Image (cartoon, rainbow, N blue to C red; front, side, top):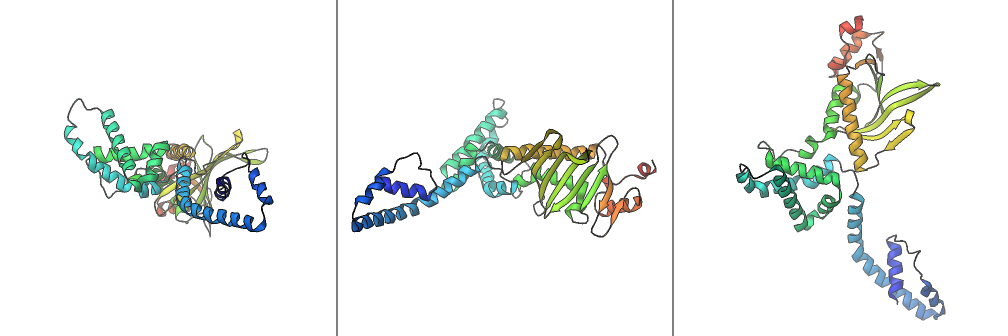
Length: 326
């Protein structure tokens, strides 16, 4: 049995490309008699099986970590990964509070110390192998974990029972903003709502699947409805999170999927936050509502629209009586 043969079998099992290497020696087995060849192959198979069983758990763990290097990690996942880490760092940093009044201690010093304590904790404890890898290789993960530990140290009102990563996330803030604007779509009291305001394009929000919605400004060009833009997103109602999934801008012939990419997810989360904030600031008001059993519009039944908005927790989005009179 040759080491090359064993390497070939193991590489093939783990999907490692061996096309650039020559395995011509395998052809030499054709010159062996049947019993000798059978013995060689059985030995290769047996030894390869033993080694694969030893390598596979480590291979899968390392592959998992490599996949997460640039992967979008949700606030819920961050909470599961890091809640106890934040508490441990807060405990380790407790002794440093005594020197906080020292004028020689700067904010940079505190950040540097926290970073060192996090690195030490993750490196020294095998159960944090995944977190250690992410802290060294995922910029967004590092920033969020560091921020949580800094807040735990600096904030006298920090609550160790708090779900810090979820409660401080932009995904939660966006959910809360969307709830104020379009709560009926979260409760399935409506499946489509149109909003309008002077000098801006109408806004359309609709349910397009289970916990999946679309939000868009649209215009018509040569008979085609164009998105300017259109964002599809999912909602986690249990944890009160909003997750953008796609972005479409027809005028630029641009379409983008998040597909788990941490940078794209971060950019689109911030875009959604700005957009939702603008909807409120620009005084958009509900114009049309579609439910399973009725259609309401400002033109035909303004009082019903106002009543629906108030009953469903979005009274601020209902047109005022003066606006209706105009």
